[in-house]
Image (cartoon, rainbow, N blue to C red; front, top):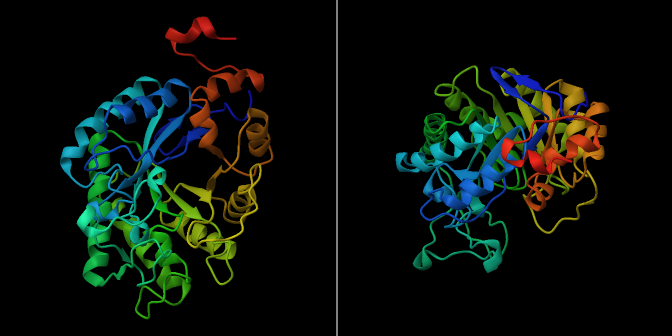
Length: 354
């Protein structure tokens, strides 16, 4: 059996292979509601054979959306359609996961194909919040600094969203602490200039994330997996570093986080990132080898042999795929043959099995 198609058990959940569909924003919701686009988008990747399908960054509050078109889980009315989606995913013997997110200072912006500029209040935008009143870029809103009441609301919103996610049928939660969104804004000294217990030293800057994790654990079953996505480096001098990521991963392991989804960047722009095949793999490898926590790696992983080699070398435990899965939802079905393995095809598609 190949490593790519070997099963992996995390707590009570069994993943049939090591291929994860990465959370990818679709910007296709109205008032946070999932719709048939999300059903087909996520459902087709389950039909395609990936073991875990993680929904896009799903806002824990209306003000936590990146854009007005983001998926959300801040009210009970959002649950019904999400239940339909998770039920379909499970029927394909895949696992349904959800990425819980708050955009912070990168909120109230238009969708990428409309220019990614700020959306003004009069045009349907909203007040944004961050660790400190520092805008992401000139064309982004200037955020207000979160006070203690605001921080408490963020923590409560994550917990309430986790409870709804459970009702909706998700079996994995991923906390989004990467890509320059709110939790990352607290982690990095480039965006966090606070002088209270949430700013300054490493222990203070990770405080919000730890509080979110503890709040979620109060409502999330102990036998279901908890993941966290981090940006292992800001790619900028004086920013969040791999050394801090390793230190954080070790702490998160002790707090009950089961896997670190290792990405990079997103906090400051412009920065020079050496993009290339599996360019973020060294960060996942370092975190895995120095802490022993399970890691997932993402970024320009586009073929089965490449993915198999990563796993065989022990550099990561899961392969998290984004653009290649957009191009080919059925990548896992075809990849099995390429690594001389077998995987079950949907009976409706067996006539096409090579």
